[in-house]
Length: 159
Ligand code: THU
Image: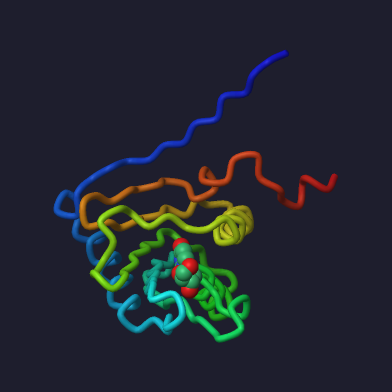
């Protein structure tokens, strides 16, 4: 028997320690969270991504009385970016979330389905997507979103 050890790289910083460019992207994600439509969960999530052409695209989670019809902030933002700019790479994406008490103290981490979408988009663009996961107490920087989905299933898995 052999063992496979999987590890991921996450930098942990305070918001104040971040360079201005990253702070600004997080602020865009926070602003987007404020506009979220999330009356069922009361959990408002915003995402803001920076494209290779310099443009920033921000959006938020959209819920529905038929629960599965809603969509996470990350996928709303990623799909919109790719619908508008199919051939422009995504460099970085910030995510911030708030509940009834304000922005979460812990960094918000994307769900499995969003990780799967980020993974395929990364493979399409052959360039990593950096994640900035905001929390009031600390911010996680994940240099490559695909690292959040070890042993992933992708097109190659069907070969
Ligand atoms: N949600 C996101 O938008 N992103 C995440 O990373 C986690 C969860 C949304 C989905 C749903 O609208 C609400 O937060 C509660 O799960």
